[in-house]
Image (cartoon, rainbow, N blue to C red; front, side, top):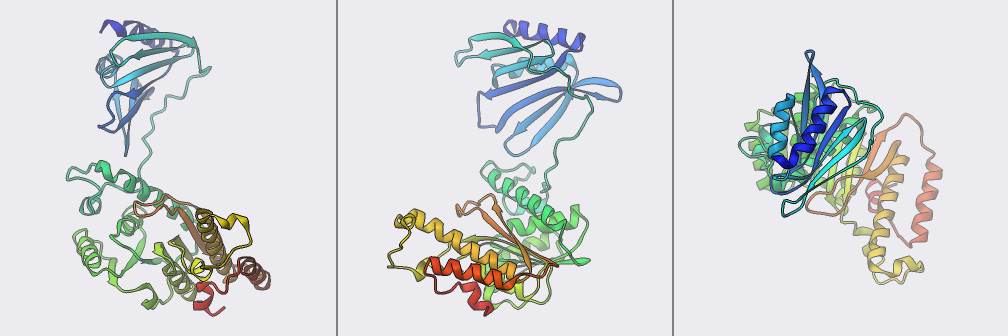
Length: 385
């Protein structure tokens, strides 16, 4: 392709005089295949220098290594056909080639962006915590070939982020040799299966996981799926959260348990002295319903949308303070929301050895309730605190 001749001339030269830094291909012509961009760098494998091409797809990265001539042949196919912009970075200059929608080519040289070459050691792409295993296919996240189904890409991303969070939280938790986990409101079990698979097959931990779900059809589906995957330590039970009786557990999880179901789960976890409590509160109604028809003094609460958000924060702040009162270190941070809700706050409690200043915490809770004319918080009521 004659249009690429100037690009290839500079590529050859940069390879010969050792000034090559990298190539990036961007602005995909078609977004349907999920390929966002490609980065090309030099690596040394078994003493041979080759070009490492990292294909960044929507759901994963793929790395392929090629010689200079093979790389040029691939670039000939990709530039203009699949990507409209290619940039060659060298220690001497940056050279950009760009194609318009009609195929018209323009090039430009600019000052070098890099003063030093990156190392040429060969590393592997970042591994996803959720392996592309059988359970992902049975749950409808991957196809028969093990590829993530495009419409489930966000769910797959959520699973991996969730496992990353769990991994970090478990580092400082005092857990038993066999980790006992209860997942309240497990639904179809996407995250429940992922956590079990990750802990048993990747981390090689002894684990028992129980998913609690009220919809019998989902309980049956999840138990059948667990059996098909030979997940012997994973089971699902048809129960309401408030009806669950817990003995000592290590981790309690309640993601998007609606309204006071989050409080029921928190109450069960506190009573069972769980070492780690992980919740993503949802549908905060209990406090808002108490104040229906009252004219708030705070002007912020005049507007419905602000009022809703404010009472969500108030509800979860009191929850966090109650956790602290019960000797937990509370954390609140952002999580990736799922397709059912825009809620994306995660409230975590980790059992602490430090004795809490209960009087001070109680004063804070009472001050919040007084400021917002709140009679009671449901979690207080069920704990009788």
